[in-house]
Length: 283
Length: 261
Image (cartoon, rainbow over all chains, first blue to last red; front, side):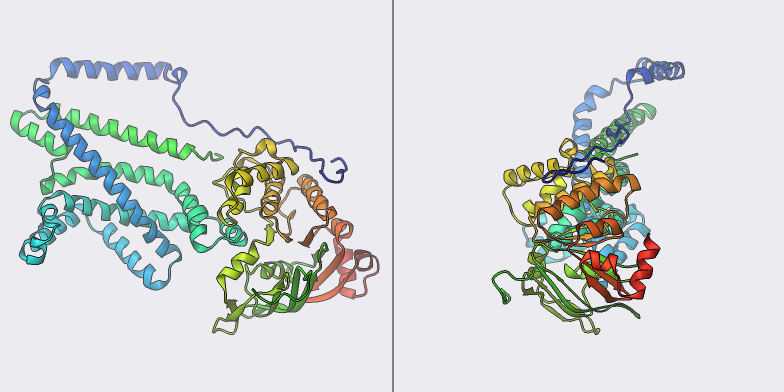
């Protein structure tokens, strides 16, 4: 180290190994062109061609508009319940990680009940239970909410939102607790109040840590959406049930349905990967 | 505003500080002053209370009793009902903390922000400095600590020495009256210590008020205007570095200096 001159210290950059952000796990062309991969790709293509040629797809044109509407319904439910559920999960996680007992205890109770009972049961309790009580109460029947409460989707959205909140509340509890103490201390040492600390340091750090888990949970949420069909909401799954009843076909609609969910999952996973890669991590 | 005693009040004046963690009394009545432009090095063995003392100054730890005055402004503390104290005025604590910049042993950079993000964070979101101004100042500070090229890197991709230099830039960004260094080189590999000490030496040379808790005795002797030796939660000896290191009066200090060399 050379002697520092007054004013500006002469600092030599220490030899540090190349620390370029790790590139995201991406499939490039050369990785796909391995012999075993080529074989598998050909097998898959063969299956698709076989399915397209030898199975019956004449119903597709008739039902395409319904499928599109069902897909839209499923996406709407997925996006709204994950966003609303996450907004609930943040205070639920925070209360459990750092709240006083009178906030932490009900939050823990909520997460335990939600995670400890089947989603289908919660949805039915809300729709067939709460939903059948409401019409008996004149104040509710006369209120501006009634046009909504007499439909099925508000109960579907509520049940899926609460479910997501319950699971993610637990995830966020861990994420909040996992943020290094020193980083929070630094925030306080630089004059941040509680709100600024939460908004600028604690929450973004916790979300960053929770993102891989949240990605998986959102995929699970997508695959929980078909349950809404049991309370008369016409989502993607309900449309394909209708196709099966009308056409007496079994495999064709189910295979197409599976393919659509698979594609949606792939899109979700890559969206989350983009989010995760916004802040490079050392692996 | 709290009473301001003189035209140029003492930046840090700590009087009769006690700190107890359960049954363990870490500080047993410590007084410490840092005058304008003074570099006070606090030395002592592990468990002597030196880090606790530093952390009490910006109330990261609340003392059990005692008084802390920053620039002549006494920090308002009230009883916590369990025989200790707790800050009485949160706004005062936050305001005073922006005049004291702390550099931590383990850097504590915010890992989700780039270096420049770390440096502009407190100026923009605490001091409400306009973004352009904060950014320009941050770039100058990162250039000064030799990290301008790394301004868009995330802390996890940097060496410990680079992270600590960035943490010093973050501290300077709030234009503090006093800098508090909590063993700034203790977590570093030996070959990275020099680059951090060079930055601190430079700050000392420009007449900043600093309190430096350190294990680097040679460095303390070189940059400090006064050295305070803590032992068992009390100030055992204090004075100019040449006196403390060259002619220690206390037996414990003699032994401590020998054990270090």
